[in-house]
Length: 206
Image 1 (tube, rainbow, N blue to C red):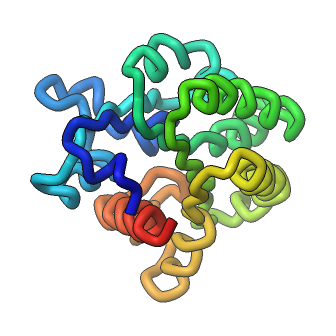
Image 2 (spheres, rainbow, N blue to C red):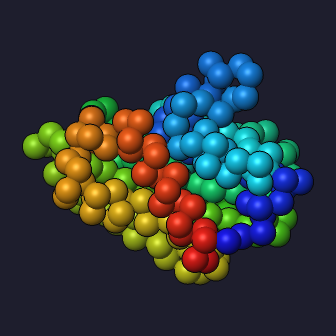
């Protein structure tokens, strides 16, 4: 397991959208929210380092770029975990406001370059979708190429890749998609526990 997540002196920053945010701005005491970031803090127990939740609901990759210095880099993180992309797909279908694969990759590269320069450990998490509505099956044609971008960037930058989409869809075969994310996007309490488990297991073997 990465020494960064075992060292209580380290700083871990989790960046993303509502899946990461999960009410963290209403969590005035710890700022961790109610989701997988808090679960990871609980799971790590006394070994837990300083954890910062920098998720903001509704964000796309380009939104992260705009606030990267203020919300992520200023913490001088030892490790940064990123999960972004589902809104880059969703907005195509609910707002007719698509993000091309090329634009998504360009934004993602702007997130990674300063982290490499700062020598921070990087963890990339696949954005995920569990199709619980018939129309969501069509989203895969937009989301899958973006997941492929994340995989390519993980290989290029030598980062840890957390197979969130792959693993959650496997779990959905036995547990049911609704039990994990009742709208296909936002995890239930079980879904957040599974994400935390997948994250820890991936880091343990990295």
